[in-house]
Image (tube, rainbow, N blue to C red; front, side, top):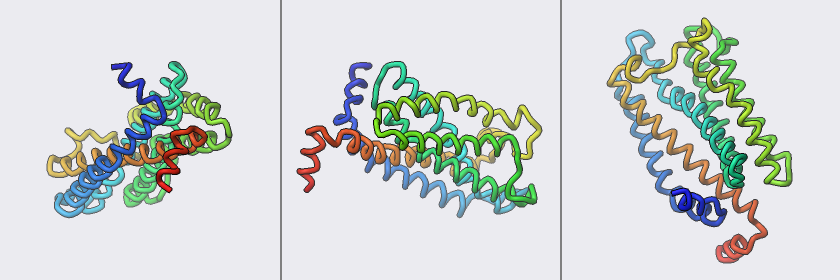
Length: 243
């Protein structure tokens, strides 16, 4: 199995694989998000406490979940890149970072809008919100650091180290509502805190966000591979073929 996976560490193979999966994953993400949002915004019942305002959950919760999940995946890829010296792993870290930053930004904006009626303000320096904001800065820092170096190998190693240092923030985000007395509600437990007729569309949106993240990551990864390998014969041949 390791030998089978190792072949995709080759830039040309990885580029081809990404091109094959992007259309299918993109279509699947559109279908899942469409189903989840139409169901959630149009047919799910009103909440007995929050009325219609709770429906922002179908945008906020998946974004918040995957803002953490993406960073965890980046950390795994960074560890593989540093320990096993697989250069494509560092490139994958760079490809995931912008998507994670956008998801984190969406989580912060929608979370502020959701909390405004209860908190009376758009922002509070709550432990959950502050640690999520730090996560956004980590994503932005990763993107900025990668673009600082002309040597993509040095850039890849640098961002991998930064990502692994930033992992300490993930348990703080997750357990902040338990460790401190915060205004933010407890972590969403789909089985216990969400009614079944609201839970199913939420599951579809969570899956849709995941598929959308993978699609965008593969698209960016293809661009990074072309840029890094632009002097190699297979890229030159590909460009000449398309022209």
